[in-house]
Image 1 (cartoon, rainbow, N blue to C red):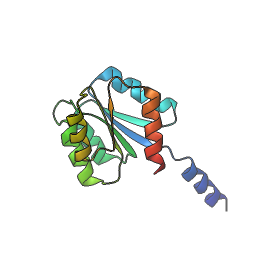
Image 2 (cartoon, helix red, strand yellow):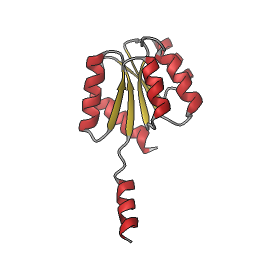
Image 3 (spheres, rainbow, N blue to C red):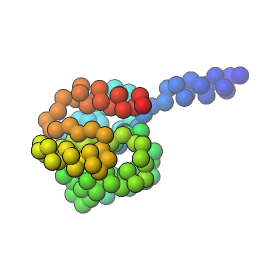
Length: 133
């Protein structure tokens, strides 16, 4: 009985894991800190190849993805992530503001698109909404 209760508690305390793929170190580090302050576990990749490697090695509940990345672009990564996992929420963060950029992102399989600069509270709200599903 003790072990089943402990197992139930551990399941209820599951910490969601988020992968941040962002080449701007300051932004990536702020995101990682803010997410950890709000109860999430967040890994950071500063380029596309590293982001894809982490994705293949670990399980993540959500991905925050920049478009302009060295090596593999955010568009390339989004395609790869979607081909491996149709259900993982993907949120693009980008300085690209045009409607066409958003359409491309959504067509590649992104669930959401925030333009930099953005409000961290809004990102946090969106993350919580997607993780509830």
